[in-house]
Length: 448
Image (cartoon, rainbow, N blue to C red):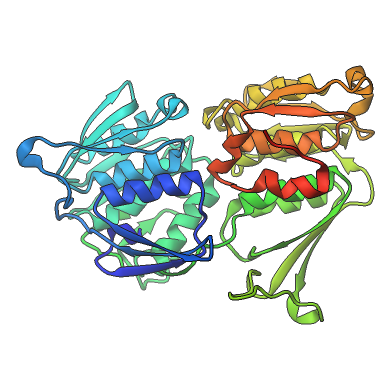
């Protein structure tokens, strides 16, 4: 969003990950000037001077037939949001990515962009994909097995020069759309709460219809990037599976992120989850040379003293939690059912099939369903199900190049009765660089 403004934005605490760098690269190609500000070796902030449409992208040269090419790496978010943003300009922009991106179709989004006047070329809805504006507005109907299709349209359409109407017959991952609308509301553009103060973006209460007037511009964006509940799930799961305790800083319980419900899942499974005010503690932590890393003076404590309990968990709004919930289910009493998450099959991998296959190598009985996974847990630990552990033999797992699968398997391995090797563990750096190193001192983890 900062890359589409006229002004200069200052973004604090950005995540220096592979996905983040894919997004920065895409924004630069679309004309933004981005400068990194470092504190020692750490990325502390970014300044962004945007390139707002409908002006042409500065580095494009349509007179000589030059196409711009954006390599999104492994980042589906960058692909989908980038396709819509690039459609606001009148130069052709081609999007490519890695092997996983090449298998992740964007056909519903491309069809919607085409109905709004954008010229689209693709390989059966997959990369390489070329889009060329201008965005002419009109009506689009789009089913959203992933919410990123709708978020892409909502971020771009206020900047178009005409009215855009969107009909949404199917929407998964609704909290992510609520998050997108909160960003638009912060820009003074969204009226989905019917306050009557910002008429440019209006929607039906169930998010089945949107009307965006267009002709708006974004203001500069200044402030910190919120802590990510999706990533916080993994160190929390590591502590829970190993029977330990963890304190998490930087999370805001009032944030719009849907994945914060993960910590409610932990409570239902028998864990102790407590938000705590730092003002009530004498040992309030501080960050030398920088601000307190907690959110609003809060910290989140997670532990367990009794067994984990299975249950039924509807993951329609939070499909990214399926891998880590499957790992927890492997150690829970009874059966853990992860349901209403068919869209987990269209992420970086088919996460339902992949987690079933990899947990089976650890002796965990899993049953695939079209829209979920059933895990038969063993609260005594996986040493009871793998005789090879008793001989010191390593169980070899594959991370399938999927960052969330790698981290979930690393958590699952902590309760195993012997060594576990995870191939392709470097994929964790896509969204959580340093996660495996975080485990090293506590869990005898070795990288190679």
